[in-house]
Length: 329
Image 1 (tube, rainbow, N blue to C red):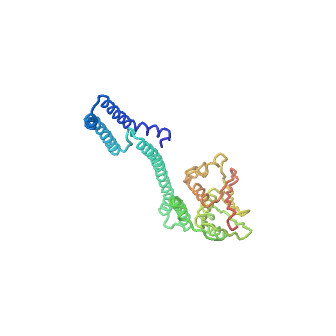
Image 2 (cartoon, helix red, strand yellow; image 1 turned 45 degrees about the horizontal axis):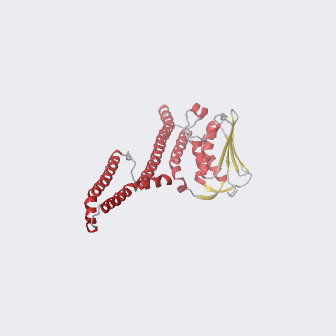
Image 3 (cartoon, helix red, strand yellow; image 1 turned 120 degrees about the vertical axis):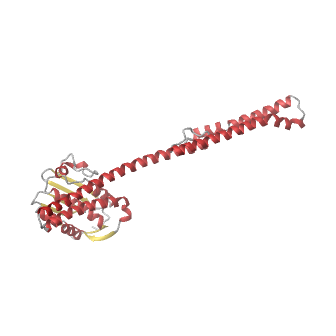
């Protein structure tokens, strides 16, 4: 918007034609009086000497308004703002306000294009990851007439995980309309997660343990917390050493998920929650989208949970879910 001082100056400049016309009219009256014109003929003389300048002035104002309208029409056709700043103070204020809104809309459109491009890349990546277990099942079926149920369940589990990532990424934009708070047992939730991932524990010969020491009751959105814990547990299984353990521990309003696997390099730890970041472990396995922990971080913040990660290469990783004090712990 135009600053107050500049607006006042423009407003005063806008009145100059009127002041000039008023001054010329007074000068004409003075000249007629000096010429000793009869008072009765003064109105006729004023009309005779002023009508032409008045008509020219009116024509000039109409022409300027017409030109401004044509500039607006051309700008509309070209989808741009008028090249010329309007002459009047109030029109200039509207013009600058419009400039500001146009700039904001351009920035918004640019962000939306970037988000749309990212969304397309992520969907393409997820579709690729979903194809991998499907291809594995196809190859298994081509090589043998009977495919083991464990193999089928494992590959379906991988597909389900990628589908959950993709669907929850889409739902994240409307997160607050998809919240349902309820009271539930953390132990029950963890046991459900272990059952759902049983085939992966068996495949990697992992021994999961739950150590809560008390029945922890939470008041939270169970579905979203289930998703966050599932992604962390799935990563822990994927990067754990074969035959090792996976510990789920509760202490001081904090749930710790600890694995004994390859660990994360110290220079990669600050970036593990970035969208699309896979790190050396993910690139080595060639089966990571880099979106799991990103979504976990986004959802945890919306649920007012704090998530921290500690890791030592070749020793393992600990993920901490710190719950707010206002929860029923």
